[in-house]
Image 1 (cartoon, rainbow, N blue to C red):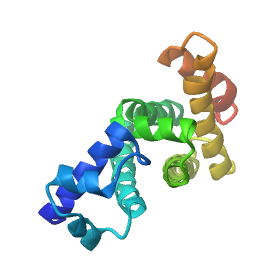
Image 2 (cartoon, rainbow, N blue to C red):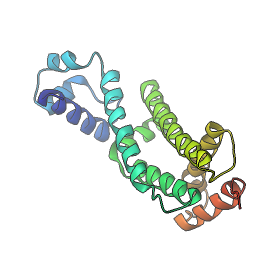
Image 3 (cartoon, helix red, strand yellow):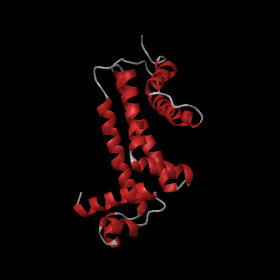
Length: 190
């Protein structure tokens, strides 16, 4: 990536994190990147394309983090929980994903809604791959990997985000326990 493009991407990510996608202008990005507005358009056709590029980088970072959570010595049920925990920790701590999730909730900006749906789809696909690997190794019984990944992902969101709206937050241990009780025991071969 050229130095100018890198400056633009970093400036846009910072602006999106601070002000949100909708409130960020290309003029702001140009000023923050210390480049002319026209320079941005040599790399990106639109603000939406710039957001897509940034979210692609975030997806790569999250996948890297999730892969780092996998320990080949541990059984599938522990690894899948470690992966999900790492994904959600990243999402909760990354300033840009926090701001984008707020914007989807509060404003519903279509471009942001689309990239956040893409992020979720990519995470579900990542989990699906781990489920398929576990099935191939004989660690879990055969199942619809895509549907199971979707359910795991949505259950984690429900326990982390939705539950906390009206109840005391659950500890990571309690979430792991519930996850194991309601979902993973049904997949276990033992």
